[in-house]
Amino acid sequence: MIHFLDQHGNTLIALPDQLASRMRALARKAYPNETGGIIVGRYDDAHRTALVRKIEGPSSDSVSGPSTFQRGICGIDTLLTRLWLRKVYYLGEWHFHPEPYPKASWIDELQMAELARTTKLRCPEPVLFIVGLPDRGGHIAAYVFRDRLVELTIIP
View (tube, rainbow, N blue to C red):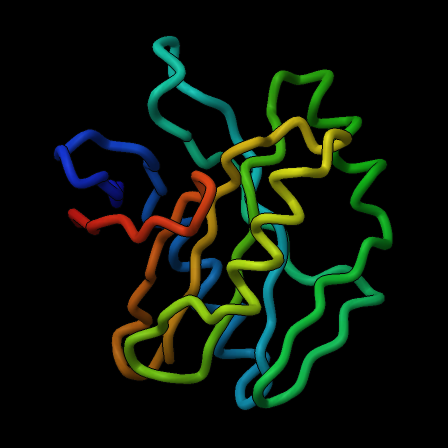
């Protein structure tokens, strides 16, 4: 399990190792293009920690290139409705940057701000994972959107 902590040492996101491996595998398959998808799960009983339960790959209408990824929407509503009934919810997004140590861009920040405002998603503080080059460790940067993107510290 990988834990991502805020500046006070509180775990904000818990990501199972096998889901981190899934993101790296999807990145490896897409390379040299970017890829991504959605993150789903639930929160712990105290509503402090996002518990990631599923990583979805790109939908069929996603667009990707060596320096861009636009997640499509095909099938997302149906999936999220089905998962909602099982008390599994939209938590945020993930995508791949083909670089060793990925960092969020200003475009990522704008996208997360838009997702936070999207009432249909019911996710005012979406999380963002950015996966780096799998053959160079597949580092994962994690962020939570709280009026701005806040980078989290990783504890493997």
